[in-house]
Image (cartoon, rainbow, N blue to C red; front, side, top):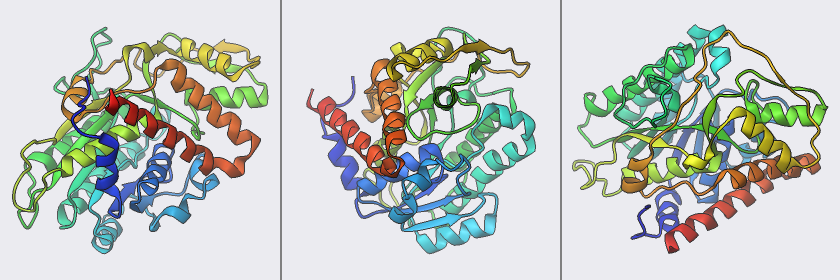
Length: 379
């Protein structure tokens, strides 16, 4: 069971209110949700990312998130000099590294770009954080696909072997190794304590995702355009979770890393290392089941579903063991499958009724999620 000794949401608010928080990939899907939540908590958000790449409806622009950022830097994370300059100027206290080439299929078409961004780009961010004396806590976001997947029924734990074989998974496994080196062997120039961890999440869903080759945006596009929905891997089982579940994990991990921090003394509880953030077992369903739930929750969605085989390697079965996050961080999954997909569907339906309300819709769901955290604490 999650820890109940502290009021978790109050601790998170106190950690980030008035603090300088640097988020890479802030213009992306998860980055936009995290940026919105951090601003809601009273943080001063500094963003580093490329321009949004999800079309005219991208969440960052539709929600006008530039207006809530203290600084909005459009920079490639592989530009080492500019990254170092931004860190030096901003002097952030918290760092959340989300910037990545995050899609499996495009990684086959552009493997070198994927390796460059996900490995070298990660090294640039972690090196800049190491060199910046103000940084207290760094959360490096990877993925559940970092594990050497044996397609077995048991969930993977943080100490299981790494080793994805497709370009995307391999790049993220390598990023984990880079992060491990920064955690354990690369001390800061001034010998201060720099707490860092990696966060491995499952397949994320939620409103405002317009990525290509991602199942929920594909469903939404099929409904809106009245076109067939093509499934490459309908029997693949994934741990589906709402984007707020992951953002909650990132924020809580960042807070725990900063607990008891001092420049010269490690905290009494060490939260460095790797952490799984996945949903409950009931959210581990097939792609075909997800489609059925989404169409049902949308209501009156008459979409023809077609199957199309793919020659590209993709995992068929992948689950995470999140015992460590539940028992040591106090994190717990709060949305079951019905809520996960009803919240997602509600976001898109409300957005299509009035796109100008994208930020309001997003903030409303964040507030509702915060109520769930409070309810969990009160149990």
